[in-house]
Length: 196
Image (cartoon, rainbow, N blue to C red; front, side):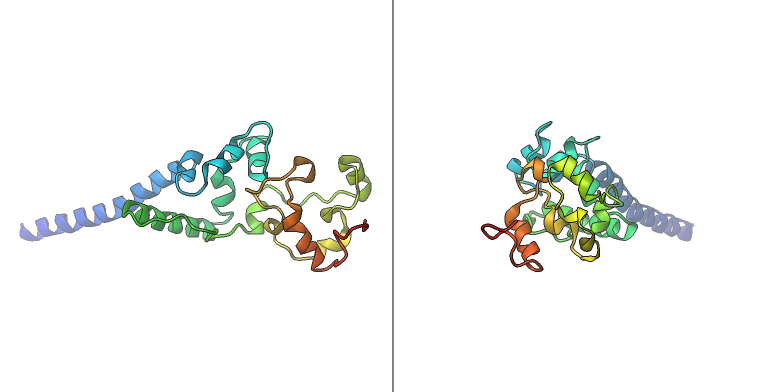
């Protein structure tokens, strides 16, 4: 009889030990799809207002949110593959525990930066229009993705396409202060007075 009680006790502890992480994962799965939950710790109110500025987005994250269908925070920041998704969940679990313990501080930078794989969930292949098509679409034919020689350059998408930085829609929300130094690493003359 005593062994039976001990076995039930061990089974109950194992069940409780497994149910808590499973319950945590289920709650986290649902909460992470609520942008208000995300910004409680990760975005300042000004950036979140830009994110929701429909239909006149002023940054790339807002343009994604206002696009064909609203893209929630987790759409970009949730990881494109199971390995990154597990890393995101692990970090979210640690952040939640820190928050509950009163020891959470908003990070100054992304601890799990976006990779090209996250962008390529929706943007694959990268639309590479001809110079003529681009001239019609944007009034010029010299943007980065339209130049065939750039197709072999390995630059992360987010190096130029920063999500929460103000920009102009007509320039696809690129910030010249961020992009020009990257261009100058190969083209020293870009941005100089009188250059094309």
